[in-house]
Length: 86
Image (tube, rainbow, N blue to C red; front, side, top):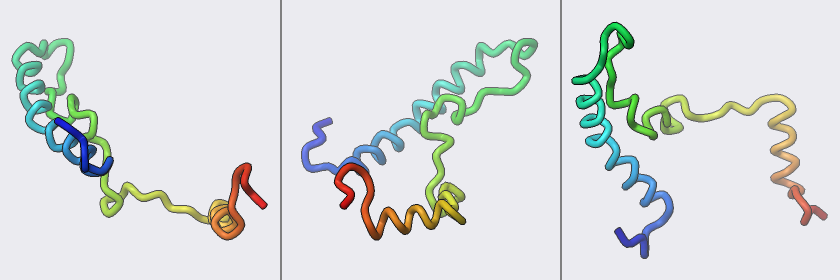
């Protein structure tokens, strides 16, 4: 794959999409060799998908900012922050 002309977001989406079938195959292979005495819970694709626990912002992945955190963010946005602060 040549990433020329693709944004980081597009590359990330490509990587996420390709893990689904791979994770399913890995789960099936591990499930064939699972010892129920050592592990009672069966393996699933989410156990092998590095992106499985990421959720889009619309599904609870957003972070609520309240109180002092909101005031700090407002100040940083209006006045700037870091070494270039005036």
